Length: 197
Image (cartoon, rainbow, N blue to C red; front, side):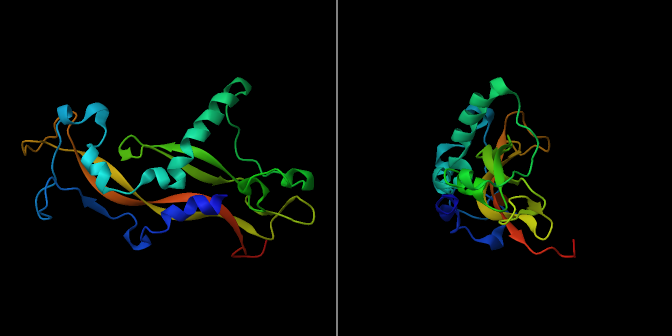
């Protein structure tokens, strides 16, 4: 169920969204953020001690879902690439076996968002399939309601180029790491339109 997957994210404060804070090399919060050299960062990944201080990403739904989405993508490759969003017709016989995001009257699908400067680099983003919502009477899309995304704040690490020796120009492969809250779309819901259809 989607609700259970979202719960691990709810402890993160929404008031910190989009704020960036440095991860310091030591216990003194007023020091300059530590700049890690290329030799200290295998494959550009954050040092293990920084990951230990941050959120438990493996418990977050947008992270946990990535592996299954990648496996599904590999199975779909022989049939071609993922088509653009299309509002489905809700059929009673399909509701019995469908997942929550498929039997919702504001259905959505997931896509993998990749950002090499962020950790986790891959996150599952929800994408609404309808502009309106699906009528429970006809099973067809209706403009009487609008589909909108539901967002959740998620703590991530953001890497930025830096110079280990304090020079103005950044050194190749050297990075400092900052914490940042981002808004992740985790589902869709139906709302009344702001104006008449």
